[in-house]
Image 1 (cartoon, each protein chain N blue to C red):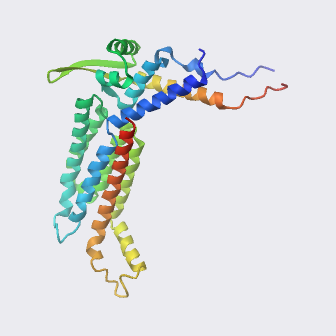
Image 2 (cartoon, each protein chain N blue to C red):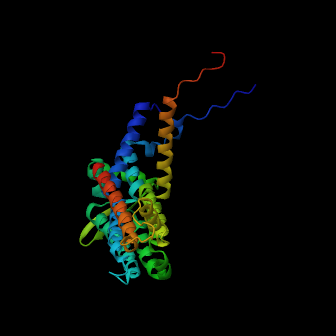
Image 3 (cartoon, rainbow over the protein chains, first blue to last red):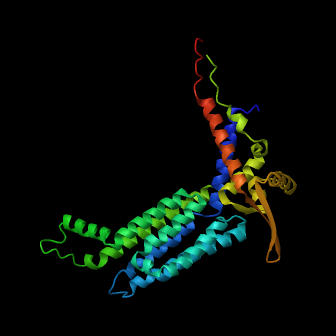
Length: 204
Length: 114
């Protein structure tokens, strides 16, 4: 078969262009990242016990809603444009929603790692490295913060900046540290979702 | 001294069914999305109904894609889905193409005594 290098290169380029376009059309990365980014951001004020005493309850409802919203979006996209995230994606979204309810105690202990695991399965089914990387970030940082690892770093920072003084009185920071961390994590996911959305639109 | 066996040229791994530009495009899109409907493929690959239908038929005959016809509400829809065999054929074709490009990019090796 007399195949020239330029032919092979053109075929590979063409394949990459089609792959990018199809990936963009199904919005596979941007939607779950924007949904979970928004939910994480909304969860930030819930971490203020004075404002919202039932803060822990938030993820029990928000997690399944997040997966349901993602699954419904994929379904709508498949019906509207004829391209979806694959049948497996709806299954994962549905199964994750159900599991989230079944694994209620685990969701209670560490909600973000549980939902990050759901996103990771979704990413694996889609062979979507971008979504997988952000699912790991969400699971890891969310898991660490469940044990106040990140908010404790904020106290370290406050001490280093000399805000706490000798008395180690962190004032408002005592209340706000965890909401700040969740808001930052939500903002990070939203930014990653917007970057994905821009890439998806550029691929068209 | 027995002559050293040369590795097979990458073009020997190219499959005529998959290698055709439009069919490779169909498999590439399905490899990414798993399942799409007929009009989406038609607009993305800029093919006519007849042309796309023929290419899909060739791929379906080889068991590389599966075609499902159904209704969504009152609207008839034709879905095309990649099979496991199709996924393998696509991966083999892409690997062969990449190998071919790499082979051309490598500087020619000098023959012993040449």
